[in-house]
Length: 490
Image (cartoon, rainbow, N blue to C red; front, top):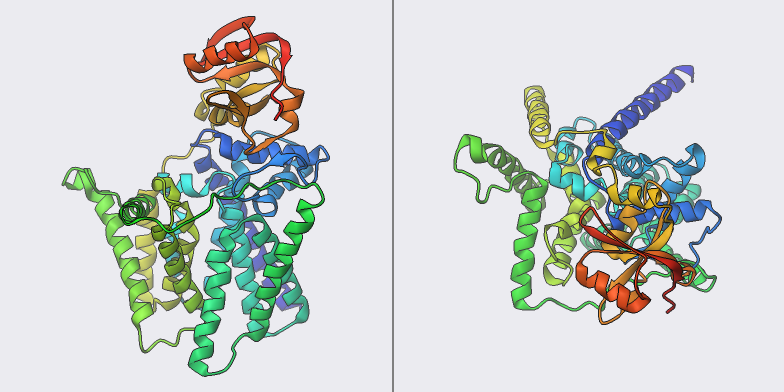
């Protein structure tokens, strides 16, 4: 018993040490990106929760709530250690570190001698990959939850325990209630994989798993209904979806190819045809093509006996590619952030089914190291330099301005590090509240300044609220200050 305990303790310490090291490393990569209003809003929500608004009453959130998967980690960290600006970067770094280590653990469970170095495709992000995985509220918390669900499934396959199914259902409900992407990267693939296996074996396979997944869907709907009727946050959701037109499908495919190439550092278009010009990109392209070829071989193999995870991984890839291509979600390369989890599943498939002799494994590990060195951008820990010393926020603090209005992309991003409440507004035919990642009370309580992006907005604000006491250019914006409180009811 003591020997087993020592082995478990040693293994746990190894994972903990790796988590700390990876979190610090990923934080230095995350710190290369300045704050933006989408992600800074997660910090503002967490601060409001810590001030007693546990269910974010009065808040209008985004297409998903991200409540349990992305916002609560900020609440826990700030609640334990107090608030610090670095937490904006630390929480996404911790989520990615957890994702990588959970994926590694799954590799060790499914194939102890597998080619785990394929995980470098996700664990060593390019500059574009940093943008896809190391900012708040970009689905990473949901992906971490899904990998934990897979670990629970593996535990049940080895030795079934009712208590583990209970944990599985609770976790899946929290993930589903926080981020709808879980349906497409886990629920539908798992149900589809069970269906395929059941047809093959002519009997229902994994009946308890199906029951737990279906129960989780029902409980998620119930939880959302209860929250909505008890004054919790409002989630506007996505617009009504329809199939993309033929021209849009071709555009979506173009965005898909471009985004995937950028993620893996393989975007060679318009690069000079030389080793110095496009050499690195072509090397990354070769690795990507090798990975895709490996997935195709696994899917087409008649000798491999595919199981629940294999089918679910392949279906996850297929469902996400199909949904992206045929929907109207694609806007630009950043829209391919939805493929991060399919990338993870792809690497796990490859790691499980790549069988090599010792020399081949050594070459694979060396290749992964080279890929990582060529992929990862230069890190930094100078958060203030990345954000150019927060010129607008510092000027607002110097003037003693604490409450005001701005267009969406200039609001939350300038609310930190000094606590300045900036309610997002929409400049159109009239100035209106923008009920997206904002709180209704902000508009009725009002403020005494408006931060404008253009002279036209500044002119419209003075027509709406009267002549400003002070007009000051600040970092490419125009700051208007009044001696009265401005409100925007509605």
